[in-house]
Structures are given as C-alpha cells and as structure tokens.
Image 1: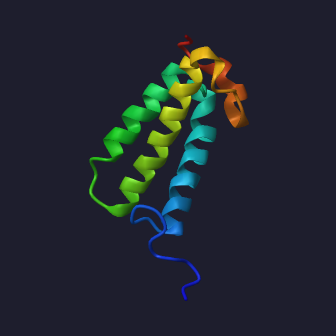
Image 2: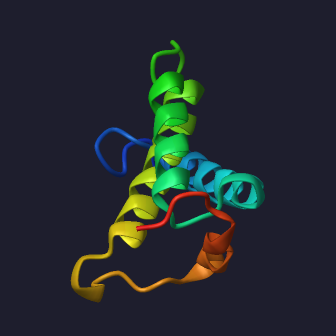
Amino acid sequence: MQLIPKNVAGGLSLLDIAEIAVTKLVSERLLSGFIGNGTVMSGAVKGVGGLALSQIDGKHAKLIAAGMLVDAVEDLAISINPFGLFARAGTAQNADAGILRI
C-alpha cells in the first residue's frame, strides 16, 4: 500500500492535484491586485496565461497551466453569473480591482 497513490483521478497523483490547487491559489492571490478577481478581465488574463503555459513541454508546466485555467474558468463563471448561480466566496472580494465588469 502506497502512502500517496500514483493514480487518483485521470492519471493524476495527489501531488499533481496539490500542484494544480496551489497554482490556482497563488495565481489568484498574486494577480488579484493587478487584474482583479472574479471578473471577465481576470478570467481572460489567467486563461491566456494558462493556454500559453500549456504549450510548454513538461509535466509541471502542464500542471501550472491547469491551475491557471481552473482559476480562469472560475473567474468567468463568477463574473457572468447567470441567474445568481455562483456566489462570490474566498478571495473574490478583490473583484472591484478588475478593469472590466459585466
């Protein structure tokens, strides 16, 4: 029995998933002062960054890209917010720093 399973979800290990989660958290905290959080602008910037990183070879570049893309999709979902389905939570209080709001 392994302490940390090598394949938990879709070929990802727990350490891979942790790297994605930490990347999402760090990108959100670092960028919120510049581009806001939970806005169309922040989602677009993080999305473009994640897509650019996904083109780099290497496991860690792909995992970092995944973390940024998860944060980008979250920001877009919060900013578009159809019918109030997505509540603001976490560090989304910095959303007012964003340039573009819908």
